[in-house]
Image (tube, rainbow, N blue to C red; front, side, top):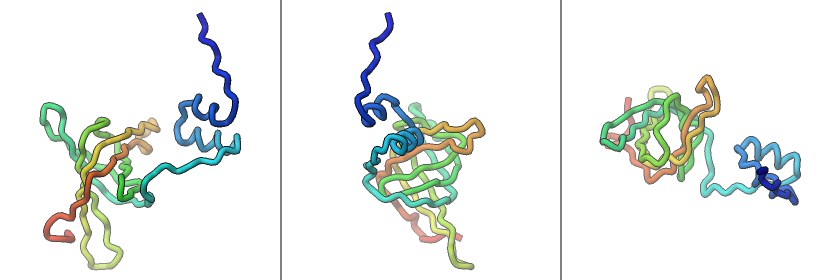
Length: 146
């Protein structure tokens, strides 16, 4: 028995029926003339900085990975990495921001949050990464690190 086809009455129904990725939404919205609405709660800033992340497996074993930030905001961060923690796990991120002045120390931030999305976008792993909704931010004692 074949399922009954869904009647798509307009651009909104087409977008919803696609169950699309963000690139599919952008292409479809451009083609159909639909205006996209940004539902993010904070402005994202494109910033590449090295990050070390840790999380715990259900049995308590700590795991660690390395990557770079793709973008960040006060509400979250996206990390590009070869290996990603699983969804819904709490992760600790240590992000090292480079100095913009010669002779000035690197500033490290520690951010904790929940992994909300994993992207496995490419075979060569260059687009792979994960999104974290942050709980808070801390600057380790001692301030900047040399």
